[in-house]
Length: 330
Image 1 (spheres, rainbow, N blue to C red):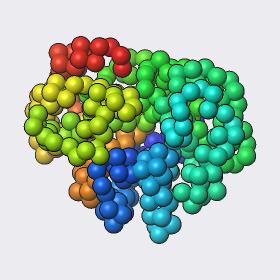
Image 2: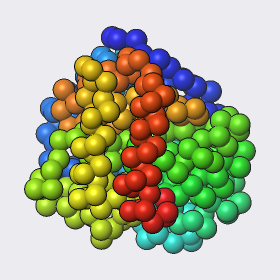
Image 3: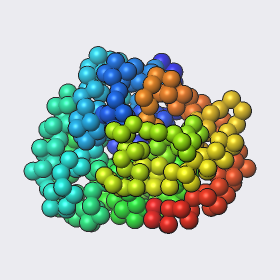
């Protein structure tokens, strides 16, 4: 196994690799992925030094969790912290975020993953009102006391939600969209998390693949790929797909970003390196559908830090092409 830099994941008290493995793709929402290919991705990540898997009970309606559970049973030597999420399998109303439902959802995830205690459970982008509910966080504390979960965090859509969660003393980590096309969290969220000792998990780091620089305006995605069916927020928050940037705008900006990649690095690796070196970030969780992608993503951890001129160029690109396009929502 390759050694990779480890950072403490907030209030979990455990270290994770600076590049983790996102597993939304393994659930099937990015097109079909065979089980053997999924295991290959996970194996390539572990062999590349990854010690952090991120999944959710809704990815493939549990398929992603099940694949991870089976894989780790076959690889007891893999010291991986598995973070899952809960809450998106029911109607999105605050009334559903109660202790009895949490226990039911946890039982399903524990069964899928084949564990008694879940390492980290994150509320999966719940309604905004949930973040202000004392009863919700009391229920999460109860799950910890019952040893159903070791720690809990949140996955958020907005910076305001992140800041509300960071103020909660039991929140171990916040998962938020962060990439060169989504800079808003840099201003307030990352400093607040760093000051509070809360971990930051950067999701959608490649803007649904845009930042790989491989797509054109003519690229066609499969009908069962969210980059087709959720391009304008038809099925869930638009920010989850291409970071909320209109596709044509993103393609043009991605071509410009690719030109910033240092010699020997891909555009995707450059985007991941940019995220890793932002103060306050614990881990970035790119997805992968192939062994090659998993290895390439993990190798971003070994790149030299980007120089200030590149960081300035990323900010300039965002200001010119992206800021107005997302209308300040994110």
